[in-house]
Image (cartoon, rainbow, N blue to C red; front, side):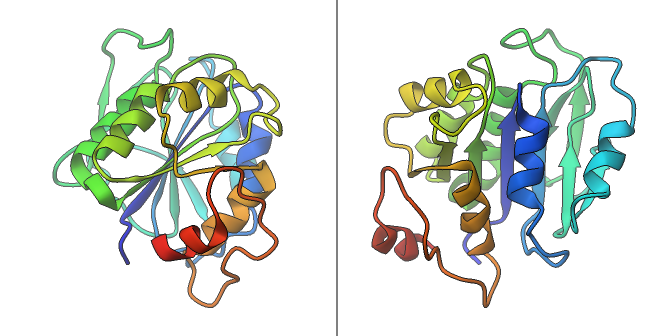
Length: 210
């Protein structure tokens, strides 16, 4: 498969949105998913339990030196930046906040883009700030696939709007429901985007990328 990993960034409204797009993915989903969800720094493990009760994929908190595996969703721990290293393992950092955030979506996206280049898929979803816009721009510049939740369907539209403004050639802008359908196209034997409303790109072009 062309793609090696998926990174997702979200903030306000993101917990429900993540469940919405990931709940239909099978346990054998072929790509590892790395998630930055802005959280309060004292967030306990309840969000991990919440996701694991609703998703077939295994959700774990990313730890130093974890190596990526398919079938897993790696959640950035609260109050740490999460970065991907050249050997495809994680590192954690307590460097200054970026965009008032730690973990920062930009920090993860930029480090993952440097590792995977055209093999990375980046997704920006609902949120009330502009974190992730420059990270998505970096993914696009290095040949990765870029997706943004349609601001019209986002609970908080500022983050997707900022991503679209910073990255003028985003590959797809999709509704929250269609983002989940799009991810299913990575699974052999699943529908190839039927009934999907692509805001910016034709379905013919989309099939050509997968």
